[in-house]
Length: 444
Image (spheres, rainbow, N blue to C red):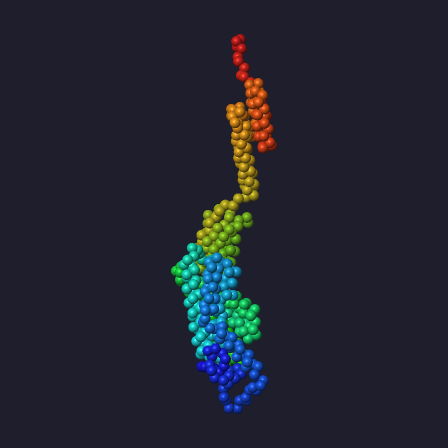
């Protein structure tokens, strides 16, 4: 299958004519070489660029290592922005486009080179992802990881359209379009998910991510083949040969679409089941009740429903009633486990807030009282038993005997009381006289 493309690394050595080899059929008019010279040059440059991007070299290996590390860390963090960054770094579009153009031009060298590069890139990406996940202390299943485990026909459609856009970008030298194609068609994140599944023992994740990668790869390559053939790349095959080539591609995509259609049907069933569960649960709850969380999942032939609802009054038969209604609607076995929590009314919330403020005020008064007592008795000029504190009224009475204190001690106590009063302006600190208890008279 060696083609006639001079100057293209690894693609044939024979003379080149416009658009590849031409079948020598009797009665066929020759192409005008002068008119086709510019197209010949453009096609040779495009093929040279595709072959160069499909090479397995140090630059390719470095980029695939970096892309795999970025994608794995982004999946573990559930960061869509980081995962998109890995898609932009990934060089896997090069060998995939090489396979597509190789099939279109029937160039065995280009196909072989692209397959070797793609296989090496896949192996390196999975090994790097396994190493990062093995070293990581976080191995939780994130939404970004789960999103790569259930490919559907929609992913196949995205990959086909992305492959068409990629070929158009290559032929028109539109680098910006290739950036968009790299983002739309995920290649490295599924390989990182395969590594996650192998390390953590989640082989269902590894299988689903492998199917997603295979879907994107074949769809892009086959779309590139068809578009390249429509733009006169490769030999001029007979209509029968061209029809056979297209039929083979369509048959392969048809076989690939079978598991994708099953996954799409399963997801559609889950969406419909969730809608039914939400409607029936809402009908059973009161007007002021609300759903805090709800999880609906398919388990073989059964439907499992878990959730938490906030209610004013507990309903003892809520699980049974909900299971019966959902089962009759969806015609399948339903297991329901709804946790009911009593929600607080507005009046209860207000009472609780008032009680909290009251307790906080009492705690603050106690703290102020301790601070005042400590400040007044500093230096032991005033005994503790002479300081009377009424925390409820924020009032302090200091019982004093000025005649017994002496002039200097009395002045010191006055300064202490003034300082404490300044620190606690909401309190009233007063002097009180210390009087002896009255003794009973002899007549009594």
